[in-house]
Image (cartoon, rainbow, N blue to C red; front, side):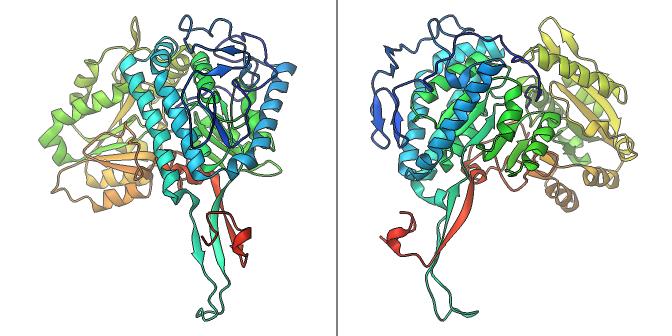
Length: 539
């Protein structure tokens, strides 16, 4: 998943359009603790109805897909570009988020659940307009985009259910016990509390599920943290429209969207931001991670930088299911034109199997990449790889986009120090590495840096404990006889991995446990029940 540069001038995606509304997020203002869906409604008893904007009623229709709606005034939190006006905009946004933080944190889990459900319902209502705009701006097929909107609203509802379960609070109560074996124990009550405003960087690869209202935003809101989203340069109009829908539902200050390359550094360095969630390039992410760690008050930086997601094919599996594995790999490489952080970028196979894989990859058609910037970076990356690796299938730029490229090397070559194959190249390219024997296979597994996923295609009678053991130490998810591309939205999922795949191997960005990134524990010792937070009190 990729984002734009950290520093620079005007937004890479679009020129600035529209004026700046000094009033803030659209919709009638309300105290934090109430939700806007249609008319203003208390959280927990959301009403449906027409959405009233400040001074006018909005139809919600998108005028001329691909541009900002006619008559819409750019919100203070979404002004694009650079300069003094944009600096004022972000300062206002951060002030509002800081002001809202304590009140939003104080809302009950049920109230926050109602808010997330309301956002999901609002997005569902606007699916048609959102998909049409995304088709134009992201150059992705409508069926895929519609499914991703569904995934996004499912995520929001999953966090709502998690909030209602009470598990989000992480409550642990140890009552006073004067006879506790090591010594008398006081009354101790542990709870998880929100960190404060969170900066979320929208992903290029997933314009809905990991973007404005995606998993990072949903999990931070569920934790009780206001969110400021830095829009991806790849789809600024879609980001604006999605943000409008979210802002119309949530209380003032709890959510905002900003544009522009300069905003990345500003958000990470601003003392009002208490945590960052980032999905993008390793180069940009590492720079922002350094900034977050070296602030006067360092903050958590949850960065997902991607990986090559190696796939290991055993000799037995290649003999028994070679054609099936080759076809499956080609489909996985081509999915979303290789623009996924879970794309299999390294296929490790026994000698003699690479040509079968090449035949399947040659049959793939060219597909468009997200935009010219992504295409340029992809072409530069492929050019760098071909300086060191043999070309097995030459894809390249064609009338319909970019056809997949397949490169070849050997496990021995990688182990001798030619480790270019272990560096991710975002787009439809992968590397086949051949091995001579199981010893070389294990050596290569042991040489891997941290990965989001590692896959094994083997047979039940393969002897694989050592290989699986090596991969367990290097990946956040290990896949058996399947492909790693799709990330199930479910409590057991872990989307993360050791450095350099992510900055925190302990946390996931998918599933309800993602909320834990934006919480910290506090213990209350010896307090009377009437002074305790409601979730800790005796009642």
